[in-house]
Image 1 (cartoon, rainbow, N blue to C red):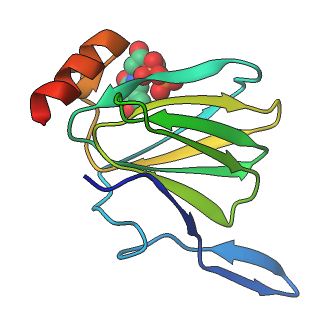
Image 2: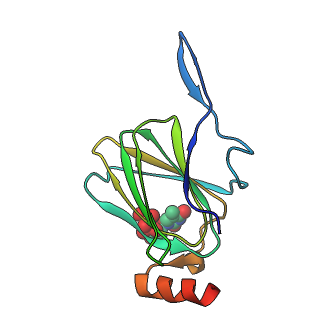
Length: 133
Ligand code: TYD
């Protein structure tokens, strides 16, 4: 299973400003859904894992801090503070995120919304991960 990783968003800068681009193959899956979270200062969002779905998470504005774990003791921490970086979260990882007051968290997802793909209970997540190995 691949681990979560930070990637650089190709960015074109000139006197008019900056333009970031996300496309294949930098985005390592076909995007079926885009959603964004905002007005979530000091809240913990996420608190779940996905069975199949992969995500790319960005902070186009403000700061987003991400804590990700594999249910087996391996943790990953990312601080997104610039639109030039994104985090790829493969399927099968628990994630929690916190946002600054002004933050917008943009999520590109490999699947349309399906509650059946979510695991929202951490003990259930650990059991499911163990069953895969
Ligand atoms: P939720 O999964 O709790 O957000 P978070 O990622 O912070 O844990 O989603 C909040 C609500 O929005 C929940 O009722 C499900 C709904 N929702 C959709 O209907 N479609 C979507 O694409 C997403 C991401 C959420």
